[in-house]
Every structure is written in C-alpha cells, then in structure tokens.
Length: 295
Image 1 (cartoon, rainbow, N blue to C red):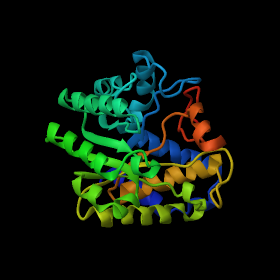
Image 2 (cartoon, rainbow, N blue to C red):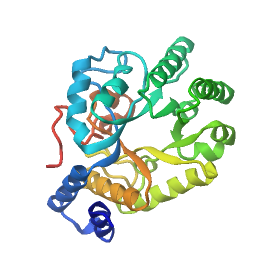
Image 3 (cartoon, one colour):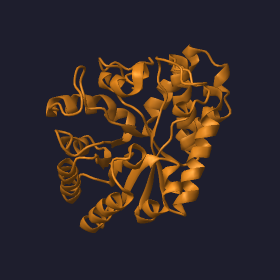
C-alpha cells in the first residue's frame, strides 16, 4: 500500500467533529500537499464578473498557485477568455474537464459549443461537459440539450462527453443520462440544509443516487464544497472550522472510495454574492487576494 493510501486510511477513522481548528488546519494542509483529484477553477479577479475580459496573465497567475495541489481543473465556459484556460492548464501539466456554458441565448450557446469542439480537437480537453445545471435552471428543453450533447459526441468521439447537473437530475431525466458517456454530478449537502456532522453521510447518498442512475457509467462529482462564512442555510452553518472539516472529510471519503471529486472552489469570487447572498463569495480554498485560507 502506498504512503498516500496509508495516510487517507489513517484519517478515515478520525472523528473530525471532535477536532479543533488548529488540528483541522494541519489536516487540510496535509491533504493539499498530497494533491487533490480536482478543483473547480475560478478565473475572475476582484471586481470582475462573467462577461468581463479575462487576461492570459491572470489565468497563468492563478494556475501557478493551484497547480501544485491538484491533478485536474474544471472550467465552465469556452468563450470570453475562458477558452484560454485549458490550453494554459496543459502547460502546467493539468488534466481538464472543460465545460460549455449553455443558457437561453441561442448565439451564445452556438459559440460555446463550437468553442468546446475546437478546444477538444486541439487536444486541450480530457472530459467535455455540455452545459451546467441547464435543466435545474430551466434554460433549455430536454430535447435541445440532448441535441447539443449528441452534436459534441459526434464531433469528438475519442473524448468522454457528459452534462453537469444536480445529482438527482440523472434519475429524473433518464434520456439525458442515456446519451452521456460520463455522469457529471454536483452534490451540495450545504444547499440541502444538512449539518456538518451529517454532511459526508448525505454526500454518500447523493453519489449513490447518481451512481444508480448511471447504470455502470463512470460518475464524477463535479462540484462539492462548504462556505467558510455567511448566513446559515437551515442546519448548514458556514464557518472556517466547518469548511475545513468538510474539505478533510470529503477528500478522505473520495480517496478511500476511489471517487473522482472536484472541490468547489479554488478562489473566492465576489460576483457570486448576487446569486447566492453573502455565502456566495466564501467557497474558495484561496481568498480574493489569492492567499491560502487555512495555513
């Protein structure tokens, strides 16, 4: 057994509910240094939001910060400068789960799909994600999304193609699940109001729902995380201690069970408060000034 497996097995028996913040901090650092499977990449600087230009310099700076700690990154768009991210990520030795952001604008959708296909044919995409939570938001009809997925699959048959949504959508919408090569599930015990003490057990249930719907297809948890500040959501309480505890627990769970998991997120992004309230900008492992929080 490798040292890494030994480390995670030793952490598995630890009741993190009994640990103080200093101990959780040390465990978080140890897991970071050992390397995560995946991390959702946040390209925006303080004061920026989607639609603002993203420079190569800011992408490189952020990639240099996170590259030592993760094997994969996940991106969310193939336009407005985001198309640079997969190419640059490859320079840092990272694998890429690249997303096309689909919504209710037909021209934007076309640009995103063509961007994803172009990046894939250029060799910058390891897994292609056609849309993110489109069904959850109600931006497209199911048939429209399936058509986009099939179009991308036909264009890049050598690359696994999937669709990202909340874990339960894959059991609720079997036609979408059927056309996906890989199942890309977002799982947030926080947003379902679970306490930190019950969060990992509930994450397991979420994963099992997606896995059962997948019928043998590979399931990747494409987003999960816990904010370190902000308003409570039912029994889910944002705090530095809870954020570290969730990170330690989920990384340990994923590694011991051989589950591919992308932590959300890399950096805090202030624009997200408009969508999620005052927890929106508190999901990063690094803060808005690109400083690692738990050290």
